[in-house]
Each structure stands twice: as structure tokens, then as C-alpha cells.
Length: 409
Image (cartoon, rainbow, N blue to C red; front, side):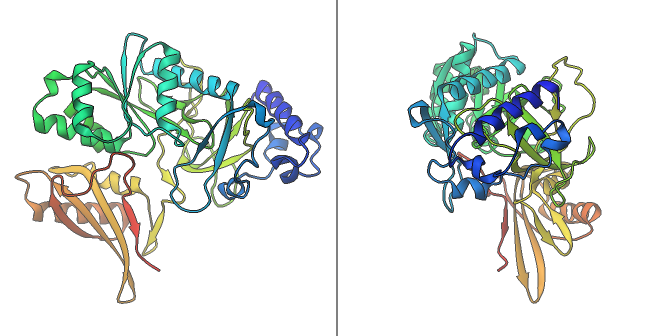
């Protein structure tokens, strides 16, 4: 933590503690902000978690008068009480500034045409991609999700150069471009991909089919939205804009800091957010922090790509499995696509993992099945049931794709 960040945090806490009946005035009741003199003092404060945010529904998180709230967004979860995040005009402007910085980091300029496919509305994705592009001065093509036929027509007619999408929808579009033989009719050069984690096999498939460079962007609705960090040209982790956020990487079990290079939970504190500041928010995202500065020259700290989420984890026969666990196995298996589905069941008193993968045309399915099972056991000390289906048989999504299904009670 820099001295500037510490002072920003103290200023933020002083404001929050002064709000009568405010969210943090109640959560941190009795806190004397002057007692926080160091990073260690700050990191003794309790965490904020999603349950806190749900309990504050609808506008309990607001830290400004209603007259200053210009927009709300809500997290994309489909179950339980939604989380409502209010934004001031400054919050919206700050978010656009961060997002424009993301585009610039990916080498995107005001001469690009940015084709935006993530959803609009309460979800932060579509409007975040758009505001950032407009801040940069680029032309936006605000398509939103779905209607693949129209997406491809507009992509060609508008000569879009940048694709913004979830990895699932980018793959679907890439497969359609390949199927229709129109790669030479599109002008895409880059993809800015976010909202879900994706592995190297999927990255390589999309890049090859579309002929583009791809950049992994990071963000979550509770903390502005997408655009709080992105890969640079080196594609070795994501730079986080630490003039807006303070980042901790902590052991999910103990809450203690982990050394650089060790995977832990990403915990974020907003430094200058007005509408709904968050202090030590547990994201559930798992990543590690790089110790060395990036050779690209950007001064901002880096975290790895998101490896998984603490709430995506399943335990089967003593083995901890994330989507990244499966992707690590599949990336070295020839003759299969990047798509997979895993189901965990309890059968005859024992847990069982069934893994569905797609074979490319002409691939020996028996050989694929044996290869996946062997490689999975080699890396994870357990053998799944492997079922091989044809290319395109697993569902594609215009939004996010769920990949692990735990069917146990």
C-alpha cells in the first residue's frame, strides 16, 4: 500500500463513518479512523461480502444523497436477493476513464470500430464497453447479445475492428465465421473478452478462427464493472488500476495475505468511489500477484488471469476441481475443441465425475477418451468417466457458459 492509497482510504472511511445509519457506519461501529496509521492497521478491518450487499437491498449501500445517484446496476446472478449498486456521475466518469485505459493498453485507438455484444440494462457489461470506447473516441457498434445472423452482417457492413464479448459468445461467433467461410470479409483485429474465465485452448481457437489478438479484461459489478484491469501486449497477467483500487490476495481459508506468486482470493477496496464504496470486498475470484514489474513499462501491479472462483470449486474424492483444473488437462489433448462440461454425481455411495468433451471431425473418439482420462489422472490423481461427443454438440451461449454441475444433494 502506498502512502497515497492509505490517505485515500482514510478519507473514504472518514466520509463513510460520518453517514448516519450508513452501511459502513453500522458495520464498523466504534471505528476511530485515526487509529489506522499503516497498511497492517487497515487490513485488520472486517471483510465485506456479497451477503452484506444483499442485506442492504435496495439502496442501503448508497453513500451519497439520492439526488447524486445517476444510475444503478445489479449483479448478473439469477438467484437470491439481487445486489444493487448506485453510481454517481463521477463514478460513471471514473469507470469510463479506466475502461478507455484498458482499450489503450490493448492498442485500440479512436480510429477503431468497437463491436459490443455483451448485454445492456442492469448488467454492467454492455454499457461499460460502450462508455469506455466513447471516452476513447472510437466508433461504437452497440449490438448487445444474440441474433448471430445480424451480428455477422453488421460486423461486415460496419467493418468492425474490435470485438467485445464473453469468451463463450466469441467462440460461437468464431465458429460461425469459419462455418460460413467469411473470415476474409471481416475486419476484426482485436478482441476484448471478459465476464467469465477462459482457458488457453479456447483463446487459441478463437484467435485462429477470427485472426485476431485477444485481451482478457477484468471487473465485477460490485466494483464498477468490467474495465478495472486488463492484459497488456505481453499477456502475462492483468494490470489493475491501483489509482482507483487497492488489491489484496489472501488465503481464502484464513484471510491472511499470501506471498506473490501464490494463488489466493482477490479482495478489493475502492479508493475514490462515491455512490457505493466497498472496503475489503471478497470477490471470490482466485488469482496470484506478480512480484516483478511488467516489461511493457506500465506502472500498475499485475494479477494473474482468474484461475477460478471459490464458489466454482467442487471436491470429488478428495480432489479440488475448478474449471481451470479441467482446462489444464484438455489444452494438451489433440483432436478436441475447447468446450467441455463436467457433472458430479453420487452413485452407489461414491462420488463420480463425468467429463464431456467434443472431438473434432475425423478424430478417434476412443483415443480421445483414453487420453483425457489418463492425463486427468496423471495431473489430479483421480480418473473421470469421459464421454466424447461431436464438435458443436455441447451447448454454446451468447452470455456466460456454466461448465461444472454438482448434482449431489
